[in-house]
Amino acid sequence: MNPYIHTVNYYETDKMGVTHHSNYIRFMEEARIDFLNQLGYSFERMEADGIVSPVTALTFDFKRSTTFADKITIELSVEKCSTLKLVFGYTMKVDGKVVGTGTSTHCFFENGKLVSLENRYPELYQIFMTKSY
Image 1 (cartoon, one colour):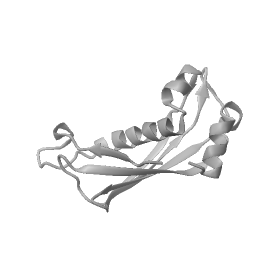
Image 2 (tube, helix red, strand yellow; image 1 turned 90 degrees about the vertical axis):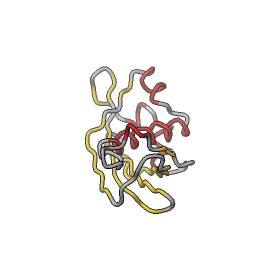
Image 3 (cartoon, helix red, strand yellow; image 1 turned 90 degrees about the horizontal axis):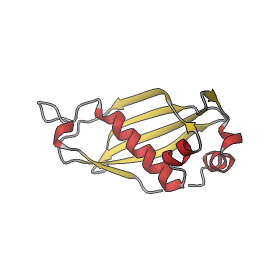
């Protein structure tokens, strides 16, 4: 899989010229959407099938600041996958130096009810389980 690259926009920085902390969560979402697109299982595809995948938990550890025009390379991995829960791991780097790490935890709903990823998307579940991406 190719890492996702986000170039920090001016509006994503604060008065000190540093990327505002709230933006890293958006960068994680951008990377996750790109990752699923690369797998061929876009959010649009899942939503068209009636599946939504809300975030149930987030973590992020800041290691270094980023600033306007920095190119943040975001490497995404599947940290844990069960039939009901999926945890992604994120490592963000600028010029090879880690600027932050995090996780996002997700579940899957269809028509307002929790669904099993293994039963609803067995092919995607197997990809996550075997890490064959």
